[in-house]
Length: 283
Length: 264
Image 1 (cartoon, rainbow over the protein chains, first blue to last red):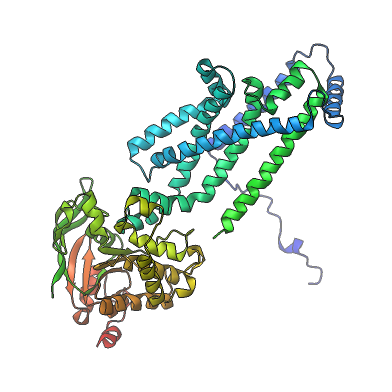
Image 2 (image 1 turned 30 degrees about the vertical axis):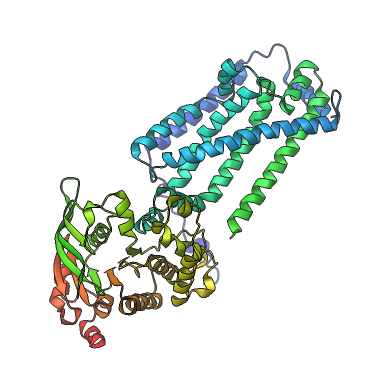
C-alpha cells in the first residue's frame, strides 16, 4: 500500500494512438505545404545568390562599421540643429495637413460607405473605388499627381491625401458598422433623422476608434512624408536625409537625421497612447 | 373610451412565403395597459414595429390618433413617431454619452436637423428631462455615463427618453427580458404608474405570462403571426394560455390561481 505511487495507478496507454486535438482539414494541409515550399525557396535562394566575391563576414563587418559610424559619431555638417528642427517641423506639417484633409473627407465618405447608414448601392460603390485607391501605394499616387502638379509639395499633399482617404474610409466605415443597430433604431423610433443620428449616436459611440485610426494614419503619413521629401522633392527632413546619404555621402549626418526622426516617432507614439487613454476614461 | 390605435387586417410577409403577421385585427383604447404574449418568433416584435412603422406592413390599415399610419410621408412620419415612445430589451442607449444626453435624445424628433445634430436643447426641454429623471429615481445619476449603470437603471433611462417625447403611446419590446426579478418589478411598476397616472397608453411585449396577467388591462395572445386570444386577464383560462403557446398542461411555468388572486 505504501509503495503505491501514481505511476502504478495510472498506467501509460501504450497501445492507443495519439489523440488529435484538431481534425484533419484541407485548409490546414494547404497552409502547411505553402510554408514548407516557402522555406525551401528561401534556402535555395541563399545557396544560389551571386555573391560577387564578397564574403559574408566581411560584408557583415562592413555594415556594422557603417552603422557604428552613423549612430555613434552622428553630427551636423551641412546644417545646424535649429535648421534640422525646422525641417522636421515641415515634415510633420506635411503629415498633419494630409491627415486632417484626409480625415475630413473620409468622415463623410465613411458614413456613406457604412452598410448600416447607407444604401447598399452607394456603400458598395464607395467601398470598391476606395479599395482601388488603397491598392496603389502612396508614392505612386504622388508621382501620378506630379505629372500635372510637378514634383514638389503640391503633388505630395494631393497624393498622400488620396491614399489617406483610401485607408481611413475603410477604417471609419468599419468602425461605424460595428455600432449596435438597436441604438440607431431607438433614435429613429423617436423621430430623429439621419444627420441627428449620425452626430448624436454614431460618432460619439465610435469616437475612440476614429481617433486611434486617424492617429495611426498620422504616423504612417509622417513616415510617408519623409519618403516623399526624398522621392518627390516635397522638402522637409526627408530631403535632407536624401542629400546627406546620396549627394554628400555623409553617414554621420544621415545618422543624426535618423535620430531626429526616431525621436519624433517615439514622441508621436507617446502622445497617441496618452490620447487614447484619456478618451477611454473621459466623461 | 376613445380608440387610440386600430389595426385592421394588418399583414407582413417577408419575401414571398415567409409570413410574419397575417390579418391582425385589434384596437387599443386610450389609457389602456395592453400586453402581447406569445412564443418566440410569433411576430410580437414585428407587430410592435409595424405600429410606429419601423417595419412597413405589407397590407391592412393602421390608424393611430386619427391618422392613417401607412400613408404618412417622410416628414409626417417623423412627426408621427414623436407621439409614440419606444423602449427595448437591450435599452439601446448610447453608452458613451451621459444619462442626461441620452434622455434628451427623445426630443430630437421635435428639432431641426442642425439643432438636433449639435445637441442644442432649450431650457424647457432640459427641465422636463430632469423632472422625468427625478420621477424615475435617477437624479443622482444625471451626469453619469450610461455604461456605468446597472440594467435596471439603463431601462429607466430608456423610459425617460421615451417619456420626454410626450408620447400618447408607449411601445415596450420585452422591457424586462434582460433584468433580474427585482429590477423587473421596479420597471413594471413604473410602466403601470405611467399608464395610470400620466394617462399614457402602454403596449408591452412580454415573455413572462405571470407578469402579463398581473399588470395588464387586456392580454393579446399571438401565435404564428395571428391573434389567437384577446381578453381580460382576470378571466383568462389555463387552456387559453396553452393554446397561445401550443403547449400541454404542466409544460409552462406560471400560476394562474395565485395571479388572479393578486389581481382580484
